[in-house]
Image 1 (cartoon, helix red, strand yellow):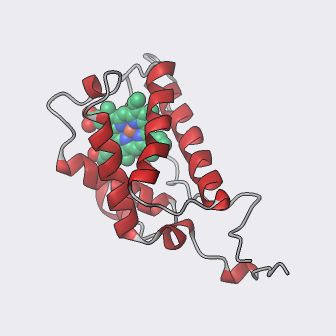
Image 2: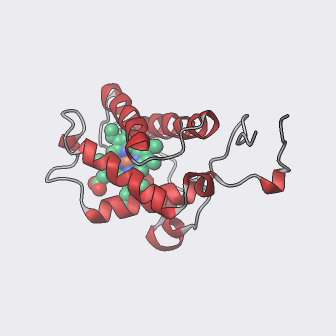
Length: 160
Ligand code: HEM
């Protein structure tokens, strides 16, 4: 028998993933892979700093429904978007970035259920395509927007 959750009972993706600690593991695992990747490492000369890892972790936590620390303390969407301006990300780099994110989710022991991973890769696909577009030289970049709040999409968590 299938149990349907009331909308108010559906956990955030942040809670389902395991809270802040899960995103810290995810982003560390991701950048550990980036540092050894021939396509992505050149974007981070000298390696990926602890500060960068912490900032990106805060972004992901906020997007997935945790505390809004990136907006409150780091500069929000405006800061993030300007970090990508003029990077000139190639389609190959975008695809590698998205692929390493999925592998890092396994490395970090994030939930592997189909619903969570569908939402996860949905955000990765969306975010990397926006980063690619914004990074093109001369791109018309939207400077101010709320940090997105990602959700479960069409498939809320399966509880049996
Ligand atoms: C879901 C997609 C993405 C998210 C959520 C994301 C998130 C972020 C955030 C939050 C920052 C700023 C960190 C800070 O505040 O200091 C950042 C910087 C950066 N991102 Fe992304 N990013 C994405 C896609 C990409 C892609 C596809 C690439 C390249 C292949 C990329 C390369 C970089 C680089 C090189 C920086 C550092 C720039 C600098 O400090 O000068 N990002 N990213």
